[in-house]
Length: 145
Image 1 (tube, rainbow, N blue to C red):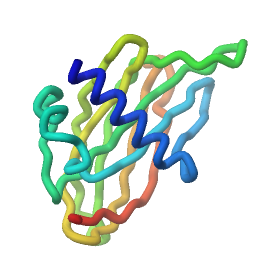
Image 2 (image 1 turned 180 degrees about the vertical axis):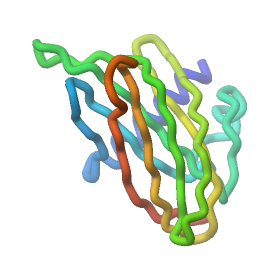
Image 3 (image 1 turned 180 degrees about the horizontal axis):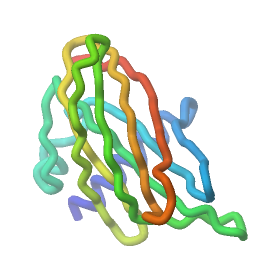
């Protein structure tokens, strides 16, 4: 039940950012990604999914889909590595954990930030171990409130 609520929360967050949807399509895969303050996650959902909530902790959410010939998309498992760096080039490794609910597969990882800190997030997404990773890089400013 809590996992279902978490997937619903993540879907809502993707919907909220639909006007600025962040995705990358490469080699037959579609990688969706976003980052947000961990305090947006309710305490119950955070506890059920082992997520640390804090005003100074961000979460990165990644979902990977295989693009089928018929136009359908299928959620797939992937190996995801990531890091977040600030303007001073202080680097934090991001460890991702999978959250699987039925056909939905999401990967969540976190890092710390300071008030109004602009972070560069770099990801290496490997849905197929026989191919090079899909590289994703984006910048985002995080706020404690």
